[in-house]
Image 1 (cartoon, rainbow, N blue to C red):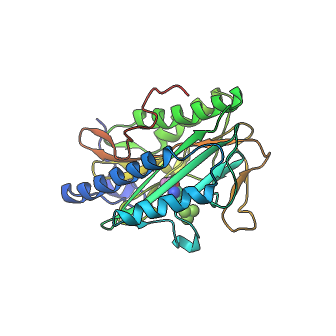
Image 2: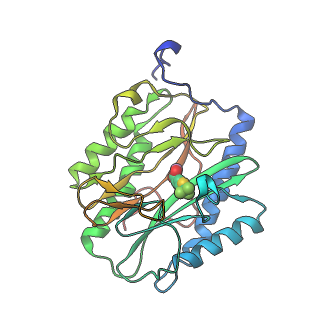
Length: 272
Ligand code: MF3
Ligand code: CO
Ligand code: CO
C-alpha cells in the first residue's frame, strides 16, 4: 500500500469523509442506481429522451429527493441524454430513439444533501458491430479504471490505464471532460482525467475520498466540439459516435467501494 504524499507535495486536498458521511454518500449512490434501474425498462425504440427525463424527475421527487442537474448552472432538465455523436450533456427533448442508436443516460440526485452520480450507455435495437464494440470498450475502460486503484493510489493511474486501453482498442479517449470528486458538492477536487495528466500525480485517493470514473470513448479521434447553441451539448468533432459509462466510487481502507452498482444493469465483465 502506498503512503500519502507529504502535505506540501499534494494538490488542493480532496475531502475525506467520516464514517457517518460515507453512509450519506452510500445512500445517494444507492438511490441513483435505483433510478437507473427504473429507467432501463423505458429505454426502448420509440421513446423520446424528453419522456425519459420526465420519468426520472417524477421518480426522484416521488422518493423525496432532488434532481441535481435541474438548474445546475442553468441546466434545464433532470438527466443528460447523449445520443450517438453526442459525447455528453445532451439535453432531453422530443427526439425519438430509433433502432441503431446508442444513448447514454447520466443521472445525478441529491439525497439528504449528498450527491449520487452515475451513467450507462444503452443500445437501441440492432446496433452496428463497431459501435457495439465502442460501447463495450467504454464499459471495460471504466472497470479497468476502478480495478487499477487501491488506497493511496494516484489519480494519474486511472488515466494511464484507461488511455492505454482505449487507444489500443482503436478509439479516441476524450480529454476535455473528466471525472470528479463528489460529496456535498456535485463537482469538487480531485479532477479525474481519463488520460494521463501530470498534475493528477499529486492527487492521492486516500480512504474517505469519493469521486467518479466516467470515460468517454469515440469511434473516431478524441476531439470534441461544443457546446452547441443550446449551451450544453458536446459532440464529437467528426460526428461519429461516442459512448460513456460512469460509476461513483468511495475509496475505503479496504479498497474502492462502488456506490452506484445497479441490480439489473450490466455488471463487471458484461458482454454487450
Ligand atoms: N452528470 C454529469 C457528470 O457526470 C454532469 C452533468 S452537469 C449538467 O459530471 F448540468 F449537464 F447536468
Ligand atoms: Co454523471
Ligand atoms: Co460525474
